Image (tube, rainbow, N blue to C red; front, side, top):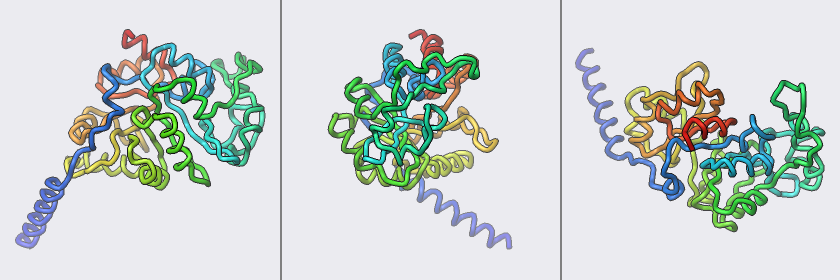
Length: 291
């Protein structure tokens, strides 16, 4: 039995060594070459705890702050237009209800995008009736040419990979765009169609690397993604820790955490040395960084 276990252990060791020798780090991508100061300030939905998220107004204010990256969520309308909204429906944020994918752009543009936005638990709605509407991705590209963006592909019945790639190429944003998605099939589809654009890890990719890294086997992982965008914890498991940064950096990946908002948490992750912070409070983060 001892001899058998020894042979099995040797075989496992040989396989691990072979995988390690055959692995490769993430390829360099020009998206990251444009940044000099870290951590990257990534304005979640344009700063949703400061201004009504995903609106042109929020992105304008984040740009005025000087954030590094504008983060946004893409959906596709019934008539094939890419619009920015966090949820699959308009119920939580606007004065109407319904699925984004079942509405036309004209119908969406009639809605008050800041109808339910509040910072005092509904005691007031300061931007209600102020004319803020749902933005399209093209409007963002036109308003902020060459500004770095982090676009999350949301869950939809119809694919948006081709129109998203077409728009990125039309506005020459290939080196200014980072694509994220929780959905493995949507991410794989986008990479096939638009291989020149940087991507973060999908859910299964992040899970695989974190498991390997916890087992001290991160060196056998060959990422196609160039960053890991993760919460501090998932299902009670600590994800963002110094060991994750070390392992990711060895594989040439950045670690971006979402979504700390308090001054204390933001400072903690600055001190920890994460590469990027996706936050609803870019104003506080910029202040803490002295920018």
